[in-house]
Amino acid sequence: MKTSNMKISIPEENGFLPEKYAKHSDVKINGKPVVSFPITVEDVPENAETLAVVFVDFDSIPVCGFAWIHWTAANIPANVSEIPENASQDGALGMV
Image (cartoon, rainbow, N blue to C red):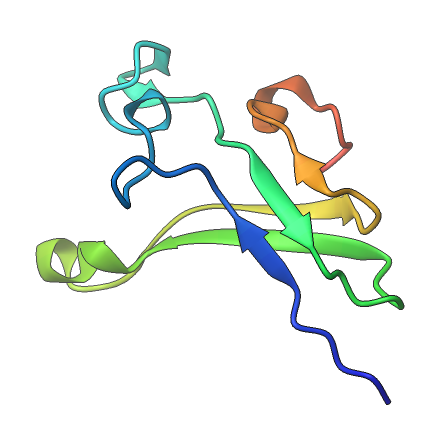
């Protein structure tokens, strides 16, 4: 059986998430940034039907004592190569 190492990548500026997607974003609801960052997906296993992504912030451990789960997304079609910017608001992929 062939194994695959699926890869995901996100945009970075100097090793960090760009500010337009972080706490200094200009687009906020109730003080929280709402524009989701694009995600590039590569080498999805051939038998995958859908994908799920979890955004876990391990840098929060010193601050709050645990890894903060910012969000999860599921039901993403396995044939996508990019989850576009703001897909969380646009509903473009039918993900939940």
